Image 1 (cartoon, rainbow, N blue to C red):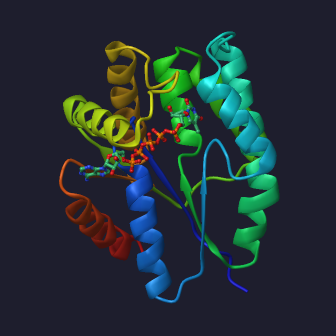
Image 2 (image 1 turned 180 degrees about the horizontal axis):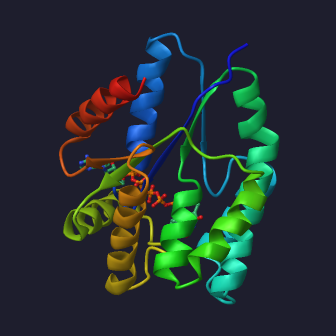
Length: 211
Ligand code: T5A
C-alpha cells in the first residue's frame, strides 16, 4: 500500500488555519481520499493534556525552555501514536500546526537557537517531515480583528500565547516568511486575507499543482 501524504497548516494567531483545515479535508474526502485531521499541540490524550498546560497555565507559566520541551513531548506522542501509523496505512494526514510552529514561536518568537530546535524536533518526530506545508499569511490587523470577533461571539478569552505582545507576533510573521523562503518546494505561502472561500480556492489550486 502506498504511504499517505502529510500536509501541515501553519501561520500566526487567527490566520484561519482551522477553518481551512476543515475545508481541505472535506474537499479531499470528496475526491475519495481518506484523511485524518489532527492538531498541535493535541491529538492524543497526553498531547491534549499538555495543550491545556501550555495554553492556559498563567499562575506558573512555563519558561521558554520548558514550553519548548512540552511542545516536543506532545509532538513525539502524536507522531508515534497517530500520524505515523496513519501514513503507513495509506491515509493522508492534515495537521493544524507542526514543526514550523516550533521554529517560528520558540525560535523567532522566544529567541531559542534554531539549530538546537531542528535537532530536538527531529528527535521528537523521529525524522518525520511534512510533504507539504500551507502557510497562511495575514496582516496583523486582520488577524487580531478576527480573533476579537471570535472572542466576542463565543465569549472566549485570549490564551497565554495569544496575549504575547505585538513585537512577538511581528517576529513570528517574519520567522514564518524566512522558513518559507528557505524551503520553497515544501512551504507554499497563501495570502489568507480574503474570504474563507477565496482562501480555500487558492489552497486547492496550489494543492493540485503539488499533486
Ligand atoms: N505553538 C504551537 C507554539 O508556540 N509552538 C508549537 O510548536 C506549536 C505546535 C496553539 C498555540 O500554540 C502555539 C501556537 C498557538 O499560540 P491554538 O488554539 O491551536 O493554540 O491556536 P491557533 O493554532 O493559533 O488556532 P486558532 O484557532 O486560534 O486560529 P486559526 O486556526 O488560525 O483560525 P480559525 O480558523 O480558528 O479562525 C479564527 C477566527 O477567524 C474566522 C473564524 O471563523 C474564527 O472566528 N475566520 C475568518 N474570518 C474572515 N475571513 C477568513 N478568511 C477567515 N478564516 C477564519
